[in-house]
Length: 484
Image (cartoon, rainbow, N blue to C red; front, side, top):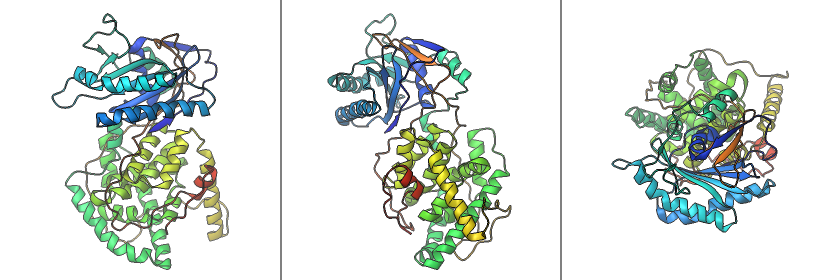
């Protein structure tokens, strides 16, 4: 589950009014930064003008038996979190979003999800917070569960506005906000290969694990593996930086995949399971290093195939950290949510996910990482400042690195990051109109449900990574003892 909060102070001078369920439904992807699918979205409203406050997203539970307890937990979470931030919601807007399954119509989806919407409405009402509107969005249509008037809400549903034609689209364009594809498409860009190329990648991971594990349990060998992993990552980042991404999502990811062999990917994936190596990699989070680092972490997450799915937590957490550091909060939530789905106990991802959802400033962690990097460089060289940039050529494989092979795979999809801002809707006694500030449109985002069960074993894994020391300190939490 993901939460995002917006200030609930006075509205900005320039405002846009959203009237009726149609414009509320159209505003949803601009609140999240993408089109949600298979999702429950709840948005808190504050004051007589119905300003948007906290909002959360959760994947729709597959079993209807889970709907009642989930509705209770979501209502509690949104209301209590809003109260902790100083303002109990005056109302809530609920969205349930799901596309039809094979052989199913969108109206059947609406009817199937009606009990879920009713449970959400009842749970909020039991806590003395009314649900002003509950909408179902499916296959380009929307229905209102609250409006009985068939003149404005016909039984067959209403068609959503064409992309880019609504008042909300105009406001978002004015603010420089981009709405990327669906949540499923964003997740797909970070998901493991399912093509025949995954077999060769799994074999490379098996071979690399057999070589690296004996070295990682030895103190001197571990230091050498750390240095080799950092050198290889820097060399690949340099190679990626010199190869501009293609125009489309698929083409861009395919290009990055061709730059990395199966054996290089295996060495990096296993090397990043070490906490100190991962913390070194977290330093590449800004400036010219950020973009090639993000492309590398995405590519590595796609290579965590078969029984190595849990190893994806490290590159996914690093991808989420780079996104958050560079202002792409929707992308950060997606990546960090997937990291927690692959390994719910990965503390580094959990701390980053919480900090991102609580709208903390990533500059605190960035400054700590800069300080640690500068201190390390000074200790190594006796000179302050940043380390030298990576060399163009790739390092020759050492004793712990397999010879590079040719790794190919089908890429996944993604989009460029949006701009910044914030949404403020407005409502009277009903949630039929909302106010949006042109100045403050949202960079709201959501990621997958992070309570999914962990899957797969961890052959060849190093002891579980703990959070970056700076992250633990600055988040006000204790850092658990970590592995090597």
